[in-house]
Length: 85
Ligand SMILES: [Zn+2]
Figure: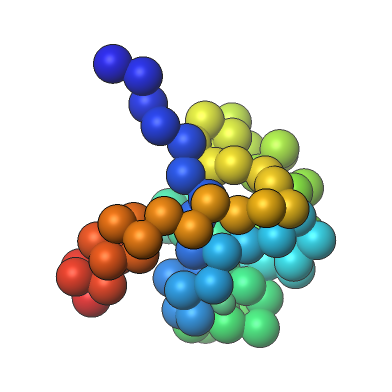
């Protein structure tokens, strides 16, 4: 089965990332958050850069994260995300 790529949302503000957004990755290795939204302590910041840089740097992110100026705004994705909160 083909794994679908998604345009990830910042887990804090739920806004889809744009290529040039400044983001942090965390040391848990699971999330990308806007630099301005980062919800953990500074010692949990693993890396910083634009969204495009960070996704291209880490193969695990590149597998499932889309880099695009035209984010997919899939309503079912947003709904699922909100349900998990
Ligand atoms: Zn954010």
